[in-house]
Image (tube, helix red, strand yellow):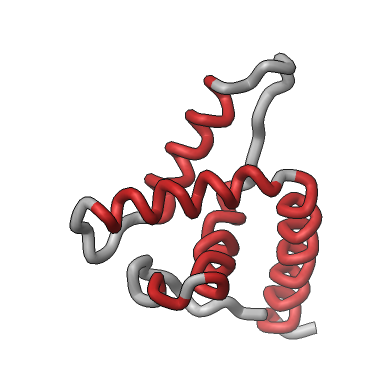
Amino acid sequence: MSDTEILNRIDSKLQLKFEEYHKNNPQVFDLFEKFAKKIRTIGYKNFGAKAIMERVRWEMIVSNTNNEPFKINNNYTSRYVRLLEDKDNSFEGFFRKRQLRS
């Protein structure tokens, strides 16, 4: 199996895990979208998705009422960017991103 095939298989698994996570945690995307819109509203032409995801982490932790730890894979950040762009194409180009392999 080539290196490219291995990387594509890893990305496919990551995508499936992301989809399951998103299905079980829709509030993460809601916050990601809310904070992206807020930072754009105050005048930013582009911004770092990782910074927004750290804000999402903060909000999820401090608003936690069930005492369960909040965890999210850092690799999902790029998936949330693409999900936001799919939902609202005005965000295309707001985040700098690399090409996905799969």
